[in-house]
Amino acid sequence: MKLTQRGKDLLKASLIGGIAAAILDVRIFIALCLSLVVCAALSEITVALTSTRNIEIIFENTHISCFKGSQAQETVRVVSKRSRLVTVTVSEIRAPDGVEAIIDREDPDSTVFLFRPNYAGRFVGLSARLELRDPLGLFSKSIIIERNDFVIDCYPSSLLKEIQASRPVTLSLGERMGRTRGGGQEFHSIEEYQGSVERKNIFWKKIAAMPDERLLVKVRESNIPKALSIGLVRGTQRQDDLRWFDLACEAAALLGKMILEIGCDVVILFSSGDNIERFYITQLSDLAGAIMEMSTASESSIDFVSELLAESDVFITGLKEIEVDLIASSVAKKPAVLIEDYDAFPRIIGTTAIVFNGDQDVSGLVTRIVGR
Image (cartoon, rainbow, N blue to C red):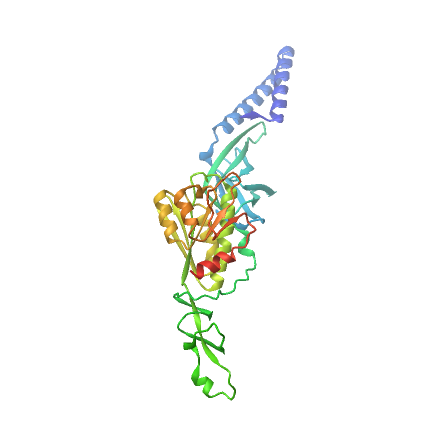
């Protein structure tokens, strides 16, 4: 609680007027000064008794989203049970670390804020600082209301990139047709014989009907896996590492888009509390939401690490994490995206791992995991 400048001026005027009235024995002026003091006291009590129990802040949407590098808009209204006695305005919105909150415009009934996330990921909760004033403008008080139901989703910018993903030429057997030449069972096309092609694929019936002596072969279609899994392995030191989670989201977006373009479904795995969460993605529109859920992953216990590494076709982790022997041994055997840590000194980085700082091409990893 504090006096406004107007309150200070009124206090001084009442004090000086009271002293002058007492000296000059002007009783009506004394009564006027006492009335002003009583009004000021009532105003002070009214503001002092107003608390968060009497005020509610209402958002137009409690869940907003945008892409990294852009901004989202939100309108905030204040509902007060004592609106006739106390004026309430929103003076500040404090968003989670990594998100800027700026007042865009103010109306008598609402305030519009712009939220600008600097990192990809999900940001939960905010606090609103409210300024309370009495009708006479003599006293003011600030209170803070916390809202843990407010969510900002900032999608990685990789989701907006054009991906030129070609279906890899592979001899692996999978559950889905790859629509390119390979080692599957379905007929794909007829081509001229090359020395590297097995003779059992020579199309003798077609050759017998041809006027020339060209050798033709039947080309079978490649098979690709129905789904490929991307696992996130998070260490205990990642609680407030916004940059790390930002890069993990970007890497998951790049891998996920390429896998979907090839024709496979995507499974995103990560630890959450006492469970491992699994999100099955069949189309691009679902990928962003799964990545936002992934950005809230909890630290991976040793038991979860083993399960995540076993289920993942490719996994995302950090250079600090592979200082752990279990993770390091998996990096030596399985494709991985390693988020760059400036102060990490891993003993080993596998030949199928990429140290990622946001600019690296991960298409080679996708080709490897499809052809495994």
